[in-house]
Amino acid sequence: MDFDLTDDQRLLTESVTRLLADEYAFDQRKQLLKAPEGWSPKLWAQYAELGLLGLPIAEEHGGFGGGAVDVMLLMQAFGRHLVLEPYLATVVLGATAIRLAGDAAQQGEILPAIAGGETKLAFAHYERQSRYDITDVLTAATRSNGGYVLEGAKSVVLHGDCADRLIVSARTGGSRDEREGISLFLVDAAAEGVTRRGYALRDGTRAAEIALSGVPAMLLGEVDQALPVIEQVVEAGIAATSAEVIGAMEAMQAMTLDYLKTRQQFGKPIGENQALQHRAAEMLVAMEQGRSMAMLAAMSVAEADPAERARSISMAKVGVGQAGRFVSQNAVQLHGGIGMTDEYAVGHYFRRVMVIEHMFGDTAWHLDRLADQVA
Image (tube, rainbow, N blue to C red; front, side, top):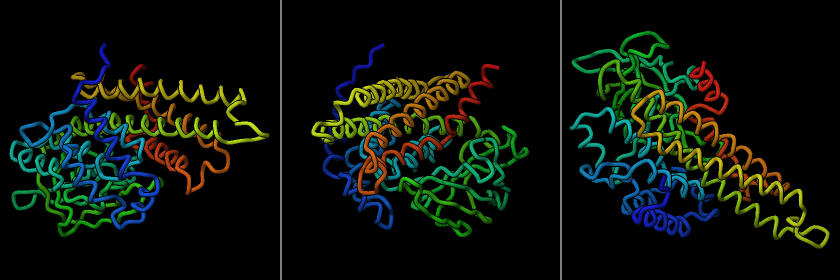
């Protein structure tokens, strides 16, 4: 199999790397964390100008027409710099839902607006009681005046505090854990009856708790048949965040090697200690194993067989999760006390990797899922 990058992919990687090197130094990122939005609207506009917001969007809708591997390369770069902008929420989760479920009019209206940086989306699916079970939906949609109104609440909605529109899952039939009976809806985030409480996750990225009370909503896709779309949206999210973890591991590995070469004890670099050399080598092996699994996730997003796709994505989530934890913990430990200080970047990478570990199902949950598929 050919893993060489195309000319377009090399150009994408180089331009994003240059932009983030100029705009996303660690001190600059710390300032963004203190901003009201928690990210940079100025950089968001630059992403639009560079075509990054339209990367996975079809050319007919103003996008680049890229695939999952292109998104993987971009997310790796974002992971290396701990990017805070709502790319995952809007472009990966939101645009995927619109592309898979939206009709021609909805796609024609929303996808070009995403590519142009004019619209931000949030995928509001998980609820407080559901943990990682995507069939566990209590939010209800009822018909009203030829449309629908929503009642319920959504939890840990990524960048839900800044979204212009929400993509909300709700029950139009069936009971709490049934696969049938879930539908998707488009909601104006500023509509009457929408209450949002924004907050920062442990790594500084933004999320929101969202309450819906009699909120008018527009159907997105087929009634009662949204679960296959939700599964694919979640799988796209796993593939993207797996790539982000690879970028974070690359940064931690480089910082750790540099520290081992420069930190002096007893008149010589601590990296001359053979035990620490072995630890650094084990980190590199884990990172490369994780990279292979992230590539598996990216290539599996387009798999036609839902069962095979789910199996490959879960395998990737487990592999990347285990590698990310190993590299993160060792990066902190090899740095000693400075590793978890707020003034030093390694601890911030550690926190980001741990937050991603708990997105879309953690390692233990996906191991159980794989075991169920084998049984």
